[in-house]
Image (cartoon, rainbow, N blue to C red):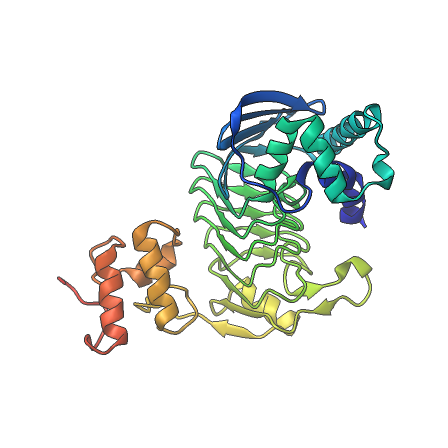
Length: 353
């Protein structure tokens, strides 16, 4: 029930702040505050927001178009709840002071009123509703903030910087992200980190040491988890279950298949929980960039994206994607893989191409 209580505490503020579908942001430079700890700036088509924390780095983000870049991301639930309540009260008082009854207003009516009374806050709101992509900057080592409740609920992709070591409790809960790339630097995935995130496939890097309770609990959307760590510490309901909130007879996600190495803790977890398990090859399978045991067009697409710099591969995927064995991922590798798929090349790798 913990997450439900969090959601209830935040609902009033976030309904006003994030609303429904928003408009493109375009305004003269403005700055202001909302609640006790949030400061925002609107500068043309860019929105910047910070949430100050007394005990940690706080949150610092910039939004441009449909992309949000996170520069800092540590903010406790307790501080967040205090801010959300203060923000909700502030906006409610604004409406009441101007003759409105917020309890009797629908979301569209509230949006129209806030746009008229506080256009700068409305500009911030519309920026949040348009976020589809989250990018975590290099240099960020810890993410521990409720991004799903902070206004990122409609985001679709997450790209983490190569310095992230820890993803804290509930960080991506309710973000509905369908594609998340985890960096090789990652070591800890906290409790409920991706709860109801909507991810269909996820690769856990080799360096991950711990996956917390309900870290990957979903509504059966999760179909494939590749665990490259051989001795990751998995809790009893770390992944593969839904409805564990009931605490009695949680039922398994029947769609899930775990991929991992023979003799690993992932294999043992799969066996203990009756989850199908596919053993990964111990030697490189050149061309198998998505690490699913096959070489097909999906690998070619992923490799082309990696060569273009739009996605980041983990260390095992990089080895498999290095189709010319020059030690780097490039367009040459993507071209060779396509040639292999259409039978212009008989085998991989192709050295000296």
